[in-house]
Length: 332
Image 1 (tube, rainbow, N blue to C red):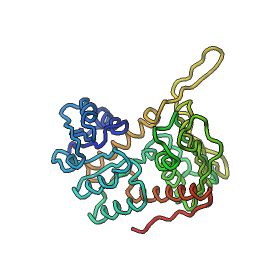
Image 2 (cartoon, helix red, strand yellow):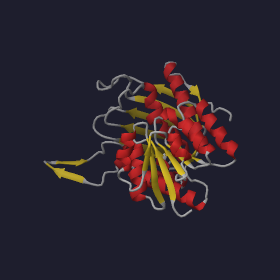
Image 3 (cartoon, one colour):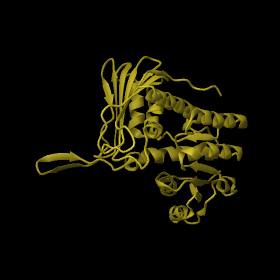
Image 4 (cartoon, rainbow, N blue to C red):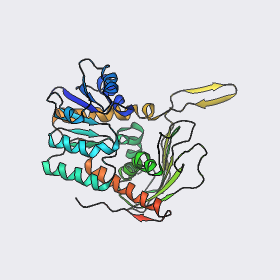
């Protein structure tokens, strides 16, 4: 397969960004179709790609003979059904996180994929392709700081999306760390607890910031701070404290401003500038694997099930006053 014809479901910020990246920055791919329940919005996104068609019916996109592979970037609640439909159609699918809102729904997706006898689902945990995170992982594996003892992960945004809740802070933001931490230190998350103290006055409808404690099988502890309404910018941090030293992500800003007696660095307004390279590299790796028939190097549906099980344990802790909760991954 020389060119992979891709259909993108969802024309919001995430879907539009995928269409732009596939069209402008990924070789061997062509976007042939865009689907969204708001067909006008789909048309606006598709206008940037010559020849791309639009539909308001995502299942029509999946079944279209001019679509070889599918990107699912629609609302979280649609992911499971659309992933199952793509698998049943025999088409590779890159599903944005989460795989599904609950572990039970994830199990259904994983079972369907296994029933087909092949691996068609890739999950969009793009930090696995971020140059900074991949370098950090390599340094940990090389023993640069000794055995990891503590990890400190920070995820801050400018403001929360309308309708954000305590639970959505976990399933929409903290879930990245539930995949990243085991991937970084090669140890599964076994126990969690959730905590919230004083909330910022700018938060509406949720407790913000939140602090989550993770314990992995190797005994290391991880703190996860999620602060959706930090205000000052989009800021992602990760520090690993080991037996012989520490490792940490550096600030991704490329420009330093010296003016008025002060030095300053800029912060991106959202995730797109910070993780542009990660999304580009992830999509290119996905397309290359499809074109060559090689296994996808992206996170798997099983990885999505595990992350969902961790999120469910965190939400259970949230509802039980912050008590420690064991992570239980359902049998498939």
